[in-house]
Length: 102
Image (cartoon, rainbow, N blue to C red; front, side, top):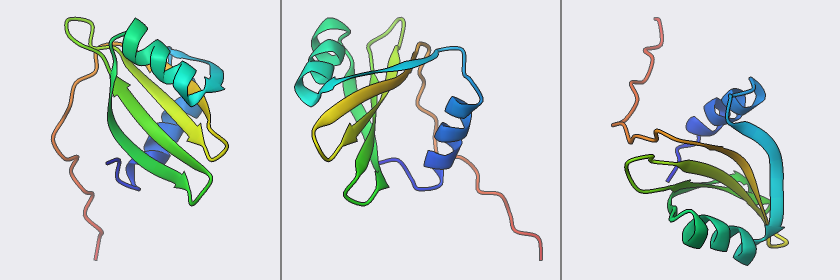
């Protein structure tokens, strides 16, 4: 599951214009999942709630050697949107938490 602290970082990167960002591709959940899972062989690996009852953020990852990835939002009405894609996904351990100065 995506930690709450990770969501602002993801959104910041998207807003900063990551190279792989593109206009959202939206359709039904079934259609988007079919594209990612059947056509691109990606599988969901994590999720987090963006707004209670409003939307869920999902991350899909594809197989080696490309290790493609897609970030999808899923709305309460069933609409799913691919909001970013890329390649070279690698799973890291927990990110270090910055120490609060005292």
